[in-house]
Image (cartoon, protein in one colour):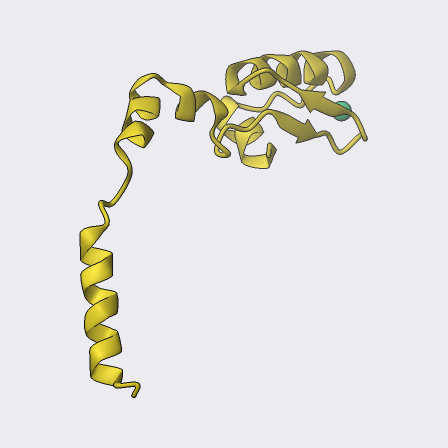
Length: 88
Ligand SMILES: [Zn+2]
């Protein structure tokens, strides 16, 4: 009974019937919740000395990392971009 042509047609119309993203997802983006809780936000950094630095957000992580560098690694002053590059 199975026809490859029919299966492809059924699958295609099913994909077309689905919207790219549900409406409520965009509402969350507008509310800024995705930005705050999304997986892209880096809040942790493992310093080569073994210290783990955890921030509440990227700005906080950069501030804490710079404070840690100033206190424990004089001369190692990294930029925000460099800190976020090794953060996760
Ligand atoms: Zn360190």
